[in-house]
Length: 306
Picture 1 (tube, one colour):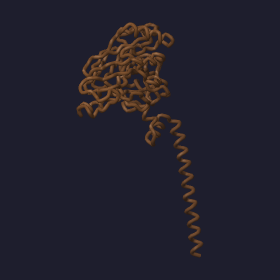
Picture 2: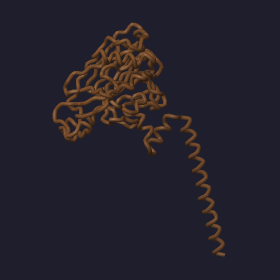
Picture 3: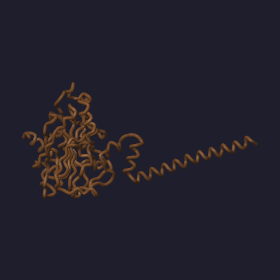
Picture 4: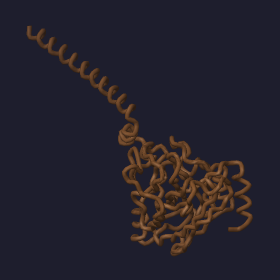
């Protein structure tokens, strides 16, 4: 990594905490100003509340089939944990963006074989481990946004997320680099993109919580590219609480419609009880009105016969 970038990173993050931050791929510059976890109410989802998604001269070039690497910095490594690398083609991702997983790391991420909880307390410490991953041949061409998500081994339930601009090259180029039309690729490759698992979400307001008590997260759908480091236990019985799974997305709780309402209520038991009570009262009121009208109608019918 070029020295000027290291100097820039150090200058930007000296005023924030020592939480671990993605150093490679190079993140959006504004990502360096806040390296805290996702808010538990989802208010800074995705990408830690990034708004502009302006590369400002930074672009990570990913050739299909090339080997890229992930490296992080910051001493608060929480004993390692599990990470995912995902991609969306929404150039300004929102809560409703779909992130497709291209690589998962279970255990030993963002640092392997750590004997202490943290790797020092400096926010600018470059972590020693590098994680290689291959860019799939089915990844659509063009500009995109990648995300690194991380669940620490030792911490309160938290999810960390950094995002970076990428340009996917290789094969047949698109007419413009600012749009993605996966239909122009081979249909089989396009199908692989659509079948890639969605990013696993937890601790971001979606109703799923991780234990983070010495057990590394085992991703329900890690995808085809998976690195497993057997250095921390996988406690499936206590790994998660709430409603968890590959389709448990914050976006599903915030979409309009009855399905979203029911899903949202299922995550809030007390609110569900209140909603049931209100629905019951409304039903009783409507039933009372209907019966009253029928009773009056019957009385009028008797009078007319007299």
